[in-house]
Amino acid sequence: MVNITGFGKIMADDPCWDNRPQETEGNLEGWEAMLKKDDAEKRAAGCLCMGSAIFEKCAKFPGVLSTEFYDDPAKAARLIATFRTQHRISFRIDVVATHDHLED
Image (cartoon, rainbow, N blue to C red):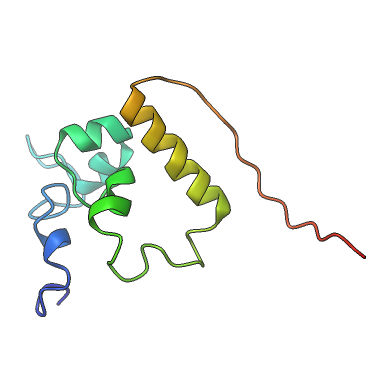
């Protein structure tokens, strides 16, 4: 259904989603196993719409940048993942969201 209009073609062509069972079967890793890989492993596997690559190749796919899910902590995590991938370094930053409001 997603690919009928061609809008979801990029996701349908993604080797990490397309023609994979949910769970690993024999020598074929399932998409659940792919989701558990780190970002570098997903990129090495050619994932187009999984891991941080989703924001590069699939950003126009409905819901990917929805403010309901793509909030400030998600934006920070994306920035950190991109930096780690580009510079091949490892570090950890904990991002905490607060909803405190300042009163006048």
